[in-house]
Structure formats: structure tokens, C-alpha cells
Length: 599
Image (cartoon, rainbow, N blue to C red):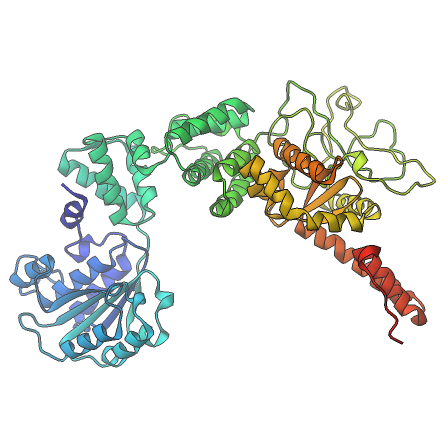
């Protein structure tokens, strides 16, 4: 049986068949019982929730020759003709393909004629929001005062696109998404009727994928049954919907939590080779993390969950699950704008590896020079080695030297002016500090205020050593750099094109990115090395790349402006011109500032 035949066979024929919409069912039944049927109804709601089906049931109920209370009998000539779509007085119009004013004028003319075979003429206008403004205006008067023998039912998935003048002339019903439990109950009935076998997990997968739409659930059930020849399993459902089996997803989470990176990459490669989509994989991982969090909170395992859920949930802390869901949720939203979603997915999943992961090679953590005071002996660094200070995220991959961003700048990148006191570089100790009891001490995490102060201090040191002439040279050569990078590796170009050079010293270029994903991707070791090689060829000397967010750069520029304004307020009024020149030179460089005397 085809999907359309299956849908027609299980389409609601009475008000009792309208599952998941008790408020609509009860209101319409009471209106028919009391003889107060309105002249126009507006049915709104997601696709597949029964809007058009309810309209046809209503058309049969008001025209049935042998009603069973308020329910249509579905046996009389009127009911049968309406069900089959052969009744000339009950017309279903697709507004998506009949959206012009001429079609609505023809409809307005036909409304005036009396029905030929039933008591009421019923016009069901599907996707009514697709009508043009002129068509709505042509319908307006007829909809307000239709003949007594006419009933309008307008159906739409986007009610916000319908003019308020139309909505005010209708009784509005909002159809809700159907609960998964009700969808599964209907799917079980169909499977029993068709002699199909289906396990609990497969039905839950289909119901959740349908997102509250019974029509979509019927289509997925039919497709899965055709693929599995009537033996519907969770594996078959996952294959049809392009998803991943639950056991495979649980194994992925276990590998991430236990810091086994190679199996994670191997699984992703295997899923991609089998045609899985990055967006679908990320969606299913998010669903699984949510289910694990529910299991961990409730301590109970619903029947639809795999027996391995409690074991994996035990390995995950509450904080890790919440952080993972938040970070993956951000990536899921931005994935549609990424040129290489596979890279973004791999980066996001590897970034979930706990910070306590140990590498076979020692990691060297470069830190900026943030203080001119010597550090006290035996003091603990303000953040742990290998952890990104601003985000609390560990490096994406294990490398001999972590990639520096603005928060972790190599010492040679900053060349501050000499001071009277020697500067001390904060670096990771060779061994972890221990407390008085001999236990390994936990490193203190930096506060948001401390991290912001560090970023500002690093930018001040870079700004003090800035070279406006070199920045102008970088800006003029930026298109050439992008072209050369694209010739070497197109994926690196896809990330780098989203950055802008904002600051340059003698051997460092600072790039600003609006997206954290783009910034982190450019600063991966391989990507950064390639960019630096290209820039070294262009400028004829070694040049390294640092990255920051545009929000951090703008905040730093604002602090410079505030300080300049404060200095201007406290200065002699006769020196306003000199202060303005000083601020312009400080912001743009002496090479770009030209002073003219207009006196």
C-alpha cells in the first residue's frame, strides 16, 4: 500500500478520530449540537495535525443525512461523496496555486448559488496565507456576510501572514502538536492491522521525528515498513531517517567522556561514509544528551530507552551534560552558515573532551605577560594548563604546543617598553602543585573579571608595539593572502575569510572574528601554520597570527576612547587641538594622520 493510500485509510472520519485536539473537537461538537455553527472558521497549526481533516469532518457533520448524534454516519450519499471528494458543493481549494484575485472573484460569484445536493456549501481553503493582498481584499466582504447556506473553513500553518481583518471575521482554532504517546498508539493500530512487527524504540524514533505531525509519522512508518519488509526495527528507522542508531550514539558519548579521541574520529568518518548528514548527527547527539540528563535527574529509565542509558549517564556529570548541550546547541544553530559543517561538527565534539584528559606528550602552555610584579614562590597559576581561559574549553586536539589565541600569547609577540621592575612570565609548572596533605591541588579557575583584565593587558602591550605602516601593508595585501591560502587549502580559506586584520606589530598580525567558531578554527595548529607560511612569503619575514573576537576588540577600543576623553576633560582648554591630534595618532598611527592648520 502506498503512503497516500495509507494516509487516506487512516484519515480521521469522525470527531472522535481527531487525536491530540480535544479543545477543537469539543467546541465543534457543541456548536453543531446547539445549532450555532459559525459562518467562517480559521484552523491554524503545524503541518500534519489534522486541520484539513477536521474541516472535512465538519463538512460531513453539517450535511449528514443520518447523523449519529453530532457525528457523521459516513454511510449516506452526502458523507461518501464528501469523503471521496466528488461532491460539487464541498470544494477544497489550494491557495498556494490559486492565490490570485481572479480565482477569489470566481469563488465569490459561486458562493451566491444555492447548494445542489446538500444543505450547506463548504469551501475549504488550504494554505490560505499564500493569497495575495488583492485576493484577501476580494474575499473580505464575502467572508464577513456570506449567504446562510455557505460555510468557509480556512487552514494555514502561518497565521501571522493573514491580515487581521480576515482573522477578525473567523472563529480561530489553534491545533497543537500531537503527543508522541498518541502517535505511537495510532502507529501500533496500523501495524496490527497490516501484520507488521515493530519494536518500541523504532516507534518512538518515528514519533519523535514526526515532531507532532501524524501525517509525517504515517509516511515514515510506511517508508520504514517498505525498507524492512514489514519488520520495523530501530536500526531500519534510523537508516530511513538518515540518523544514527542509539547504541552507536551512546558509544560515541562514552568515548568522548573517557577521552578516546581516535574512536570518536573513526565513528564520524564511518557515519559520513554511509551518507549521514552533519546536521542530523548533531541533532541526534543533542537528543541523546537530553535523554541522558533526564535519566540522571530522575534515576529511572523509560521503557523506550536502551538498557545502556544508566551506564553512560553514570559516566557524565551534570555540569558536563549541561555544558555539552549548551555548546552543541550553539553549533547547531550556526551550522547552516558554515561552509564545512563536517569540520565544525568534529571540532565541537572533540571540544567536549574533559579537561582532565592526559596526553602522551607534555603540553606547553604559553601565557601572556600580565604583571610587572614577580610571582610569589609556590603560588598556583590562575588557570589550569591546556584550558582556554575565556571559555573554560580544552584544546580541540592534542598537540605538542597548544595554539595561542589572544588569551594565550607567546612571549615574543609582545614587546613592551622596558620598566624599572623585571616582568615575570606566568607559565605552567613542570609538576602539578600539591597542598599540605600531599594531595594534588585543584587549579583555580579565573573569574570573568580576571579574564577580561588579562585580555585588555595583552591588547595594551600589543597596541604599545603596534606598527601602523605594517597594518596598512597587511590590509592592502589581504586579498592576495586570501587567494594564496585558498590555492593551498580551500577549507582554511573558508575560515580565514571571516576575519579582518585590526592590529599589527613588527612580527604579529591580530585578526578579529565575529564568530567564536571561526576564530577557534583558524587557530587550529594546521590552519594557523599554513596562514603564517603564506604571510611570511608575502612579507618576506616570519609573521605569526593571533585571533580574538570583534566584541573583545571593540571593548578595548572603547577603553582607549574613554581614557582619551577623560584626559581631554582634565587638560587645558587651550590644548584641545593637540589632544585631538594625540588621540588620532594613538588610534590610527602617525603614518595615517595628516594635520593641517586652517587658521
